[in-house]
Amino acid sequence: MNRTDLAAGAIFLLLGAYVLISSFGFPAGMGPLPGPGFFPAVIGAAILVFALALAAAGLRGAGAAEFRLENRPALAVTVALLAGCLLLWDVVPFAARNLVFVVLFLRFLGQGWRTSLIAGAVMTGAVLLAFQYGLRIDLG
Amino acid sequence: MESEILNGLLAILHWDVLLFLLAGVLLGAVFGALPGLTATMGVAVLTPLTFWVSAEKGMAMLLGIYCGAIPAGGIPAILLNIPGTPASIAATWDGYPMSQQGKAGQALGINALFSLTGQLVSILFLALAAFPIASFGLRFGPAEYFGLALFGISLMAGVSGGNVVKGMLAGMLGLLLSTVGLDPMTAYPRYTFGSSDFLDGIAFVPVMIGLFGLGEVLGQMADKHGHKVKAPPALGRTWPKLGEWRRMALPGLLGSGVGTFVGAIPAAGGDIASVIAWEQARRLSGRKEEFTKGSPEGLSAACGACNSAVGGAMTTMLTLGIPGDAPSAVLIGALLIHGIQPGPLLFRDHGELVYSIIFLMALAALAIAVVGLLGARPLARALRVPDPWLWAGVTVMGVVGSYALNNSVVDVWVMFAAGLFGLICRKISMPLGPLVLGLILGPMMEANLRRALILSRGDWAEVLLRPIVLFFLIATLASLLWPVWKRFSGSSSRS
Image (tube, rainbow over all chains, first blue to last red; front, top):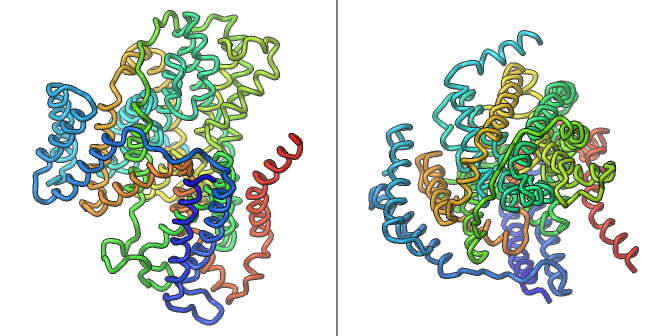
């Protein structure tokens, strides 16, 4: 049994079912002409069919290798740092937000403090120069 | 026609347009040469830099990145045995052994010169074949466009690393994402969950940046510690001798022809082209035993093929609006932002623009050949950049670029979500190509099917039994059943 394909198949089954059911809530078309729900209904049905095929392949044990994530702490920190940056978008100015992100990101991936600070300052400065002053986009 | 050619040429002969082209080529060279950065990622991440300039300048930069990244992908393939882009996979087979034999400079020279040959051959094909194909495309009505879009999606699934089910699921997901926003016919909101941010649909560029930029960065982080950077070898001379030219000319041209043809097939990009061309060159060679041991013939065929796929892919993209490979899929989204809609109408209404694109590609090919010959040493040194620096740079550019599209944090969240989804797709071996194609072709497929049904007053037979539609439907079925048939015929022959 390939648990990765089985789990992916199950998730897609749920998604397909949701899309199919929700498409019935859209207004009907005029006469023989399809309405706004027609295309989502076809897509939902197709997702259901292919999800079943994927789950069946997972049960048979065929398919790719199992889902594995190496380097999980670094991934988790990156995702958390990015999410933090986005949540603080309107609160903290871009320069500070970006500098902290790059420095912490590089530090966590094993770079030294000095290297991380220099790289963070250079990247932040380059982006500010190109976007804020060059292209006149307010990065906040 | 002559005036269109002349106007197309004059439109790009401005110092600022040429400067943007050169900047694109250099950036493309960096994205192609650094393992972990790809041509697709380069086009996706750097597209926002072109929003605020004219269409000519934006196009010049994006085409420069695309045409520059593919040849540069051969540099780490030759020096480090790591393909810089997927297209340069076959360049490792003979390029790296040459490098180990102390012929690194010669291999880089072959890469630069046959990349130029490949690109010029395919650009010539584009110039000669595109207008006839586009004029045939002008006969297409809504029903035919529906058939074409369906065929495009099925092809992507069929060549998705042999996994039709996952490819089709990814394609369906792309189609589903394309339905978000107002219905094209009735303006009824679909899957917006009450948010006005999604009434215009999901922005294409942030999704691309997320899937191919952030997703790739997270994917590399999740593969332990990425590649180990080792010192590149000494280069030596780069220019081949006359005798070597004679040996390489035929396989190089063969590779260029094969690459142009394969590249023109939707979804079959430079990676497939270079593998096929390398194998054909090996079969025809009188020195088969040298292949995989440092054969200049094998390297010239591989380099010619992966680069000629660029022009082939652009032919399909410009004439029919169907991307030939992943970078050209992203390029479609970028061109749309500049108000350029690829397809037959582009040739009828803006013929001079098509010629501008052809001239820009030719200039980019010449520029990257010069960069490849003269800049091989600094690019070889640049290969030592540590992965975390690249990852930080791509992530920052991805965040800022997504925001810059509409000055909207929602777009950055979309990019973030697409990046996480891209990571999961990589880990469960789900190809991203069909998703992108679904997202691009979804609106074309739905709107044209519904228009065709309105024209036929709801008569499905009238829509589906038109000759060209029927041809596309049969081709769709064939492309879906081909991998299944291949699998069963393979297993029966094994048993």
